[in-house]
Image (cartoon, rainbow, N blue to C red; front, side, top):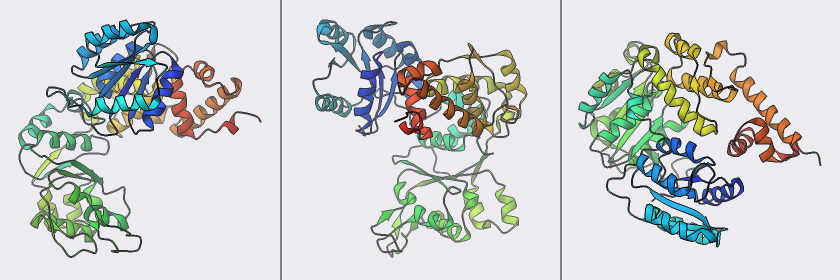
Length: 439
């Protein structure tokens, strides 16, 4: 099991939960903490943990009931029960109900706890246990309103055909490339590179790798993305941003399945499958001499055009409800329903930024909601733009910390957010003690 295994903690004792989270994150585990077992149950599918650690005695639901319900949502997961010394018989009962082990609090020692966690995560995963790719979107949500695209992908994914995805920014090209990889017969990794996010001076070395001494600063050999994807899939997003030099070199890879690292003489073979994507009209770029015609024909073997969100109108509410649940869990807010005005907005707004814009609108609405429902509206119509919102949020957090004299639990309660969310926001905004404490 990788060090970045996902661990979900359900513990109503905030201090103890924070302590567990801290020592686990120091070992590079990805940890989510929930103080309410009912909210934790809602988060199971989205987070898809490799291990669940639950307190035995909690106000709303005991640990045995939680395990019983959680195992129906995600069967074959590993569960650990936390118990006080006086409740060990109950913990043994929990083990009989499906927990793999129990730990006592206070912990005997952090070292023993981490050793136990390590041993559990090293154990073989049951054959019928299903784990998601990190941040994977459920396919019924990803392909909602474009089921025809799913049928096409289902046919072409198992082949070795080169695929290019066309679509506006924010239409989910990266997520769909991952699905194609999963549905293929590839045994290697899914490797991704965004050609628009790297400067011209770096894109070549990132793709092809380099030998020690190839250029100033190349102190050791480094494999490139093509090499890392040797038996898997290499996804090149925004392929239209490649420079003419890199276009020529990449064309050779497609033609010969060989390449050299920068500064190297040895040809390296690759068995990678290539999926590319762009939000540009490559055919027009060819006419304008901005993109190689021979490379265009090599890439355009099987084009798939992804529709913008405004053309998936019948599916927008379903997608929005999924995002509300996912984002609410991430920011530590209760999941709320859409009001009628928001449903009408979803069915009429054009969403120029597609899914990415919808996510931003929903997150802002969740953070600003003070009722049992959330109201969605376009960024341009919002009373507070994103940057202004962050400035106001930072000021509100600092003010709450000042009023509580640095007591974070009290500040989080006054702000109406979880302690976990407060810690996350303090780190996000770089808030220091000197910002709210007078020495």
